[in-house]
Image 1 (cartoon, rainbow, N blue to C red):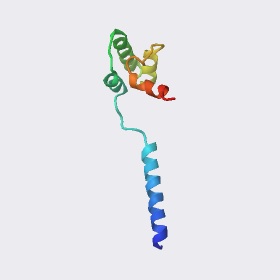
Image 2: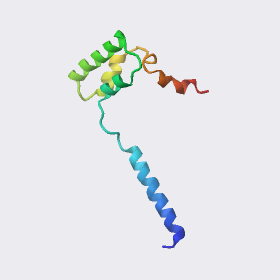
Image 3: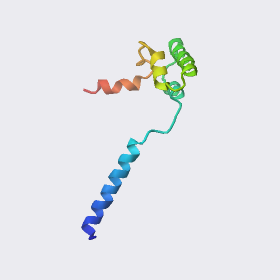
Image 4: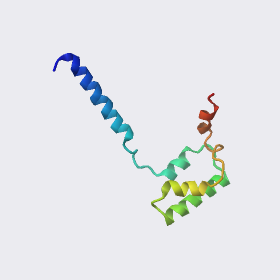
Length: 91
């Protein structure tokens, strides 16, 4: 193999490795703990959401995201996570 093809092969190996790394599922973190940790403001409504999510998690431990989604319901989370609104403001 000449040197011209070597760097192409190394580039392909790097891109494929990076792609596999990015597709691989993230490390297991407690979603509810991260949800609480990242919140900027915590009031009674937020506490109720977290408590309801914990109760749902005890009943159905395999539905972590769905439990949190059910606990949030129709509540607006933008006041607890203001940095999440930045994408909508970039126009």
